Amino acid sequence: MRPSERIVDCDVAGGAPALAKQFHEITADRKMVVCQRCDRCGRVQFPPLMACSRCSSRDLAWVDAGEEGTVESWVTVSTANTTLGYSVPKRLIDSVPFTTVFVQPKAFEEVLRLPAFMAGVWPQGTGRGAVAKSA
Amino acid sequence: MTIEAALAACSDAGLAPAEVDGAIKYTYDASIGTFALLANLGSQELAVAVEVPFGGGSCAALVDVACAAVESGKARAVLCWRTVSGDDWIKQLVTPDPLRPYYMDTVNYLRPVGWTGYLGIFAAFYSEYIGRYEMPREALFEAVNLMRANAARNGRAVEREQVDRDAYFNAPLTVGPFTEFDEFALADTSCALLVTTEDLARDSARPSVEIVASAQSHGPDPRAYFDSRPMTSNEDSPASWVARELYATAKMEPSDIDLGLMYDCTSFTLLYLAEHYGLCAPGESAARLAAGDFSPDGSIPLNPHGGDLAGGYTHGFRQILEAVRQLRGEADNQIARAEVALIGGPPAGPTSGLVLRRGETRQ
Image (cartoon, rainbow over all chains, first blue to last red; front, top):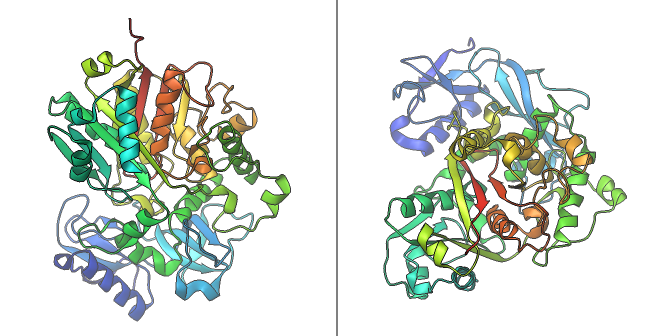
């Protein structure tokens, strides 16, 4: 599949829970990074909404966001402990330390930072703009 | 706790509790509802009862809404309050509820890739920030100890001891650049304040404080609210938009501000916000902190009460009370020149801010 290829209609009528369900099914089945695109004006957006944030169209689709992008921000989680301020997702406790990265896909020009999982700590001395490739 | 704070606010303002005709609270907190509070005060008339959702971003939003009610003539004395008890509020915030999908929506997309909650948001801002500017962990350490030094002079604060350098730098990192010391303190607290008409304030025996400007904003990219904020660019945050609106309404420049009361859920948030509210230039906060400019005797003191970082978490609401105390010259850690104060909410939207000025002295 090519980056920005249309996958399926977004179930906007089903509201936020339906969109979340679709997202999890697509990412689990196809192992790809996806976002939402407006069929009418072409705007891409994430997290998904129930209408296009530019033209208000309700005709939205899930699209492939490609396999390459630049890291604009990141968060390394170094502990499995929990306080009021943070808790590590149960499924990832054995993966600590790990990093959440926010990636601008190469396929799109709009500011769009898709969250993704990276194993291990963020490499010291590496700054913003590092190239990310999905594995 | 809430009733106690509400009665204290009335007593301080010299207003009979029965005269309160409006009530504004956060949706998620440990207190009673708006109607119940008014009933307990023996309020003679109900003009407005509103809940403002969300957390730290709403600190000044309550006052902003109260101003709208008072300025329109709808209400005369509106009580705004924040009660935090243990982790009740956070449980409410993270409990799925289709009627208030704020939190769980974003978590659907963030949690599978390792999202940890609020600390992760500010850690993400930090990563983006250090790609542009200098902010060594030394600055975070100094910020923690500045808040604790201020707290030591505030009878109401909880974290009053300095953190030893070795203890700080040997402490394990938790999320991003943060250690246990960089997170807000916890306390069971209730804060209350009254927004009233000019004539009621003038009649009071106690010095009043003028609300010069109040503003709310979610910035130009509202899809990226709070937890999802790192999914967009953060060079210019919703707080920058609040700041611009505040200065325009107040017809003031950042140089007109005598002290800043910043939302400080982490050490980094305090410094980052000083920049977003224009109290120093972008990229300058670490150097200004090291130079002592943010200390109580510095050129632009920040959180002379120790903030939420050392005072106990109130979602930034305590900052408004401290601003009032400073402007009245009644604060525990009183700064020398306090005519105009700026209260700034978090750099993730929706957020809010206030500019307050010392009221005219009663003749």
